[in-house]
Image (cartoon, rainbow, N blue to C red; front, side):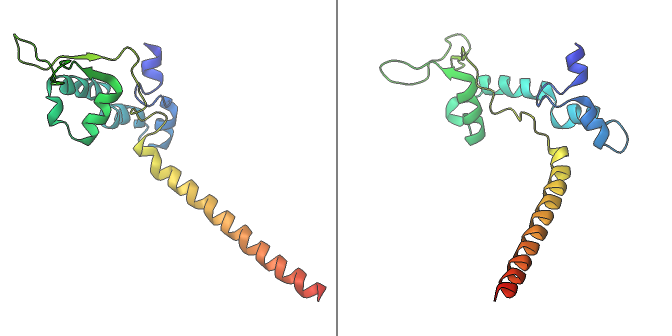
Length: 143
């Protein structure tokens, strides 16, 4: 329970990171409510279980392939259906691949990361400019 209050269940980023970057100090609460709401992820899994495999879009197919498998008829290769409900038979994979989860990544932190990436790029560009000038000065001195 302490882990649930101390870091995001979806991305695993600690609470203090979100609270530090937010203006009102409620960054973590806003993040787990709006961006990485664990109940929405659970709902998505239930949604995939209920929707027909042939109706999946690209993203749904990808997540389904990472977490579940449909039961196919050996002869026709059609997805088998439950006789009582008519729903396709699907089961959770023994080893679920969670790489589709945004691990150590959050949209709210990207703008901040972009700013630091831009600052680093500016520094590298400035160092490159200085290196070219030094090279030119050195060639001039040697001639």
